[in-house]
Amino acid sequence: MFTKIQLKKYLVIISLLLTTSAFANDVEIVKVELTSQNGTWRADVTLKHTDTGWDHYADAWRLVDEKGNEIGKRTLYHPHVNEQPFTRSLSSFHISEDKKIIFVEAHDKKHGWSSNRVKIDMRKASGDKYQINLR
Image 1 (tube, rainbow, N blue to C red):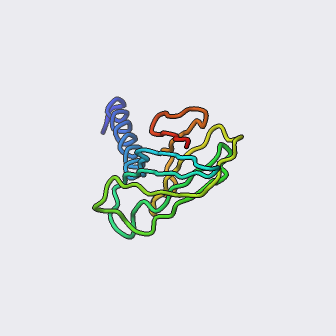
Image 2 (image 1 turned 90 degrees about the vertical axis):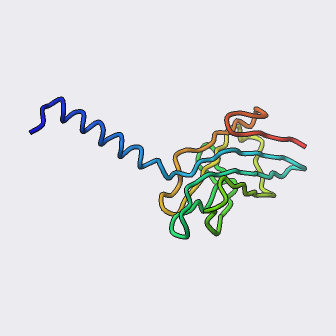
Image 3 (image 1 turned 180 degrees about the vertical axis):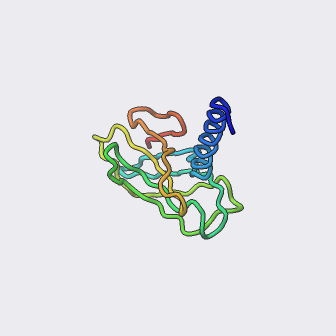
């Protein structure tokens, strides 16, 4: 039998292992570069993920506003097992001037949309993991 202290230690360890494994395969958004030209935008998003093949790979990223409304989405049609991290772009979308904060979110086939997203303050030229270029 376990003592109360031993049982608590084991429960803490198991809890930490379960929490760590839940986030271990999330898609990481390494960098976002937004470029505005003549009223339209281009996004270059760099992702990192432990793609293992067709059943488990990073298969999309999107831009959303604070309410979760989709601004633009890039679907990724194949795994990038040997190409990590990798950058993919989306062009010719619009971000209305009233949008002060937007987010970039990433998705993988096995876990869905990651809770690890990049927050972009459209009033600042750069921030944590993002840069905005105005041309």
